[in-house]
Image (cartoon, rainbow, N blue to C red; front, side, top):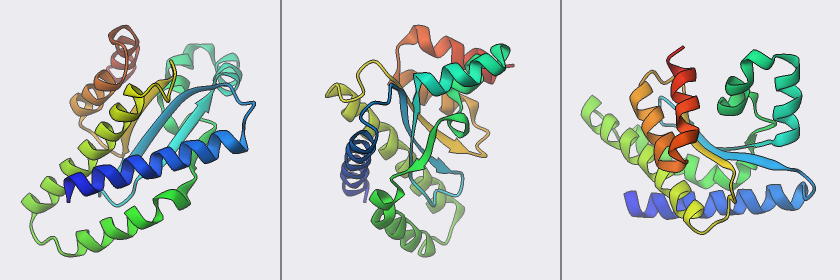
Length: 168
């Protein structure tokens, strides 16, 4: 299921990005990402703009890194969800067939890695420009994995800010 899942996530992400950029051609996008939940039931697209980040940071300058790195604070969260409907349906169907913690952990890792690899492949094509690129998981407490994913997707000097934020 991994290669198929990777290709489906990548295609849905590309479609979502294209739709988002087509609908908002004047936006100054500065961040893109995918996120899921700890139960591995979803894949969602998010994006932020420099204007939105600046506005949030002006109201709370000490929280700049938080607004930059935390997807719930981004301007577009769970955007273009229709692009991911088929994937989410397949995920939920597959989850119903899992009957052990080991199988779930294997699937969860597979899904999360497919999301990160999709983002890496899209980034390698230059489709994000110099924007921040992230994969995150809601209600996830594995800081090491979160940092590792950010490190795979961004320049090392950027990730230090994320590490500092997580370690606060």
